[in-house]
Length: 126
Image 1 (cartoon, rainbow, N blue to C red):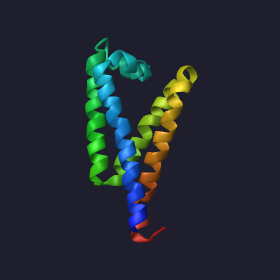
Image 2: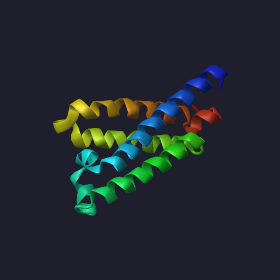
Image 3: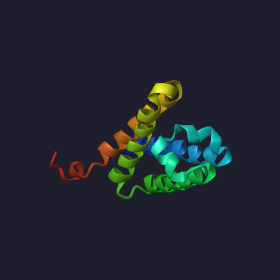
Image 4: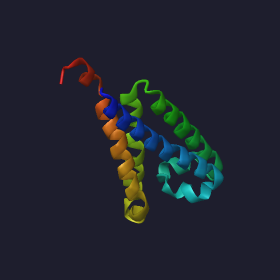
């Protein structure tokens, strides 16, 4: 990968990580503002303990961010980072499309990073 492409992918990774870290921090500060975006199935698992649910998910987002920044197994890290915002979009499109439409951009960023790091691309099999 040439230097310009490397810079592009670093910028994409930093932008993606910022989205996850900001969400984790903000949900920790004000869980009730974020809890409504979770599917009902997940909400039932945690019952009425919104703070526990948001902090648990926040820890997951922080760990995913560290994983993305590390570049280790990048295809899998970015694959997970693609699925998360798409689940949010699908779960909330009917009532919150004006807010969750941005998650499609986050999913596109992570999908681009996943495609670039797809294992077969490195072996020349594609």
